[in-house]
Image (cartoon, rainbow, N blue to C red; front, side, top):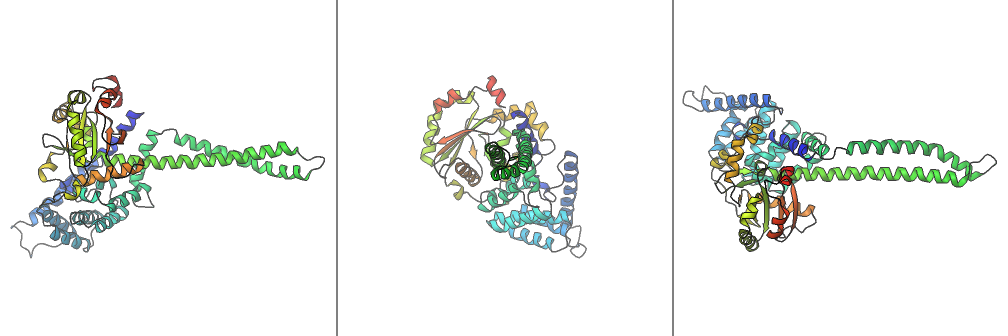
Amino acid sequence: MAVVAVALHQHLLAFSQYNKKTRIAPSLPYNSILLRSQRHIQFSLISCSSSSSSSSQTPEASTETAESCVNLGLELFSKGRVKDALSQFETALSLNPNPVEAQAALYNKACCHAYRGEGKKAADCLRIALREYNLKFGTILNDPDLASFRALPEFKELQEEARLGGEDIGYSFRRDLKLISEVQAPFRGVRRFFYIAFTAAAGISTLFTVPRLFRAIKGGDDAPYLWETAGNAAINIGGIILLVALFFWDNKKEEEQLTQISRDETLSRLPLRLSTNRIVELVQLRDTARPVILAGNKETVSLALQRAERFRTELLRRGVLLVPVIWGEGKEAKIEKKGFGFPQKAAAALPSIGEDFEKRAQSITARSKLKAEIRFKAEVVSPAEWERWIKDQQKSEGVTPGEDVYIILRLDGRVRRSGKGMPDWQQIVQELPPMEALLSKLER
């Protein structure tokens, strides 16, 4: 069942990736045929924008439309002219855009605000796009251009709204989370059915028992036996209380599971730079490596890395990939002069997670190449986003945010275990099976 859950989780992740070059309509329906047509439509719009900016057309001949403003904004944005791009997206919203154009203008306007560090404005734009223009929350999770926004408290608030799935905002995101939850806990629905059925039966029985109890209390020749009737009533009422308590307990557990799945989804999209300078997301390392996250101050993490060198050979046999995260590095991150998120070369290095992701991910050649690029240690990209996720994980585990911790991930990308301080590498060598072992194959 774990294998099915992971496969479904990967399938949902696969269709939530966002193509940076075709930002005009990021949330058309999630299937491969529509994704292909979506890209075709978007490409034609951007191409149209490029031709309109060429010298073949005079300014008098061109007509300003929402579409042209969005595409011009994207062009300005790609050149690092964020303020001018923001103005174009705002103009597009004032020109009676259709739903696709409005969604694109709002989304890219949010990206501009995120680049400028205006988290509240970015969240407001995304909230409108989610509520009124069917933006998929997976787009926000996957876009590297919103990495700076995902490190802000405003993103956490927006994600919590989407997880709770209000009347309109983020409903599709909660639906996807519940689908994964049902695969991981397939008998929850059956339990709830029995809770409701037994509660109804106990309630009906109580309706007949209570009048008998009153007659037993009043006494008389034909009165029921008091203690027997009182015992039946107590059993029914006690059963109702217990079943209702179990029902609410199950609901609470489901919400905790949805929160964890949402946190795992965020974790799977955190970016890493391998030793070959290639940037990948954690989801791309599934079945290939066991990342071990070391979070703490610089001295503590450096010492842990030095100690790990003594066990390098054995740790590599077990697929361990060290991921050091230094507290406070995210605040010192340098801002790119052009665009935001990943640099252009880094973005180009990311494999496309679209309609051909399954084919690429399962390709023996692609997996072999990726495996060859893993060299014991990786460097985090967007440290602020990593730091926010780790501190959220610390809160969920009852650990004071900011303490030195380590987190060991499974081959399927989920958290295996975590602990305070730095890990005992000899214990990890004994605990983790080699990659070729049967237990590692079952873990995938």
